[in-house]
Length: 114
Length: 113
Image (cartoon, rainbow over all chains, first blue to last red; front, side):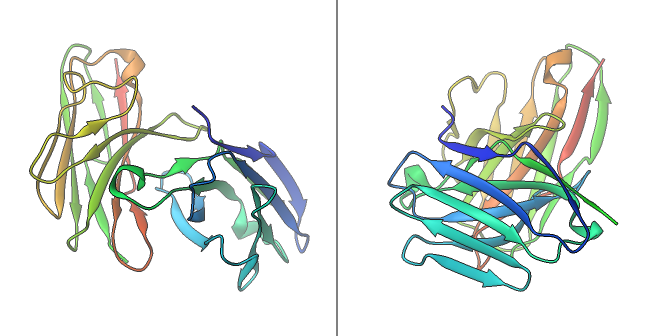
């Protein structure tokens, strides 16, 4: 029942580099696309989110790019830092009581080397 | 954003016993959810906790194994019943409400021996 596919599974970048994580979804009823950051022993924390009426959203070093026609969205982390090393999950949800739950991607383990 | 307190943070339990996990939110929220996460893997939704009515379970999860209560808009419990080693996992509470949308607790790391 996987409706959100995420890649890559793991990613290693050098400090100062750009980290790019991609997700693709199937259900066109999805209208909310968040990215979560999870550190070991902690629950996921919202990093940034986008709705399908915009193609890009930027918050500090983090940018979501959204392609509605391709049903894809991606997270770009600029100037990656060792403190960004964590697991990142994309997710999707849709409005309505029955559809409010989040569907998660498989996750990407990011390692930023100093 | 809502802040979620989840307890216990970890536990080691004997097979055949039950464990109840508590989730307290610092503000009223519209929806609460329970997830399971195997180490290094993604989150799998167990059920949506409905205030004042029976929880809505996802495919593969049943009420007899994972009874859920939600007596009000800020509190929910998940019980893992008749545990086996296969139930060893991280259980996460989540709430929908506030500007940040979905918020997660820090999880309960359960080991069944």
